[in-house]
Length: 116
Image 1 (cartoon, rainbow, N blue to C red):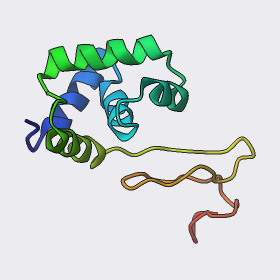
Image 2: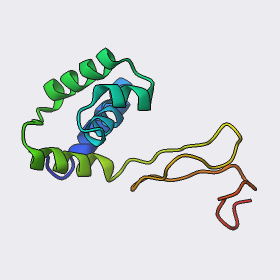
Image 3: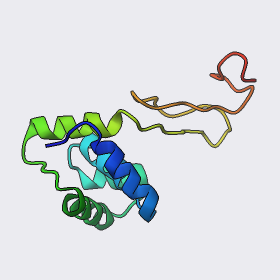
């Protein structure tokens, strides 16, 4: 079962090994295990998503057979993740999910005051 600090273990592993298990797992959980959804969200092939999730299970020993465990894991991983979504026009775009930070091009609509 996930415990406080689980996200730190995964993030530390990602930094040390150049992997992206944390984002892949979070996307997998937010897409309710739909590898096609994860793939389109992250531009990964479905088989790559399956391989990453399987490898993360081996490395970190978490189980996804219980809905409560999945929720706790999603909350733990999502608590510290920040994402940057910048549109091709240079302004702000994309949904702002809980736990994310929106960064905008200075002077674009949606830029926080004082950041132009």
